[in-house]
Length: 337
Image: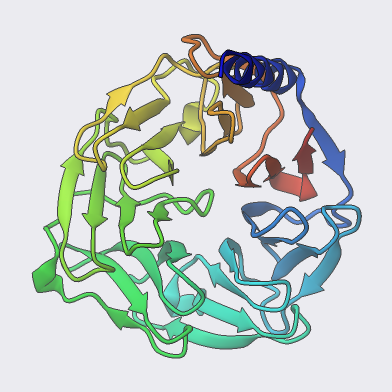
């Protein structure tokens, strides 16, 4: 028993040392498109969505990337993506509905063809982020409409979408909305729980959108500032990351944690390098890894101070176990090693 405990502690120490020495290794995306969404569904299969109607796909752990173009979507900006398999994926475009930019596409043939499965043309509709509980059931948040959150749900693999009844939802505050910046304003657990963030509050459902509560965070709401992304690694624990995109290098409190299902939040020490963090992840060794336009930050388990890895600008991160990828502007793509 003593020998087993010693080996386990030694392994955890080795993992922590390796994590501190890890870095982003650039990969060839083959495009100068700007990307704000990425989803690693295994150590081999990763999807990413960008502007100019661009999608990236790897099925070999990033050794090579396929550059995919969605016909008719050349002016669209895919701010979120969800991969089901190497063949099936959903992409969401963010933009004004009245200009034809509020759409969700689906592919079932590895991106060779795409079908529009959701489209709004009503003025005021603007999609921000989405996630799925499983291959058939998903949830999407857009900017509020009629003083209530604009939340859509599909229960049939994207074939139909319905807006969650306004009567079920708490009202929004003046100027409250989400940032379509990293595809991480929605976080889910497979048992039906979902968390959706605005600049300073969390809307929570335990039952796939049937009932809702709203919780306050310590982030301050601003037109360009607040929460930019969420990540939950179990039913109770998660982080919210953010800052101000107009002052993205300014020192701010940029990461908060919850241990009670999102009911209460507290700031951790400000992640280094200072500034905006848009997306974060918890690694298997319990380290926290954050990215943003200000650079990459890591907090190793049982440490209180963040380590600045670099000042490279990334918008989004996604991991499958210890295999992580980050993506950003001008085709900036990297793998964590």
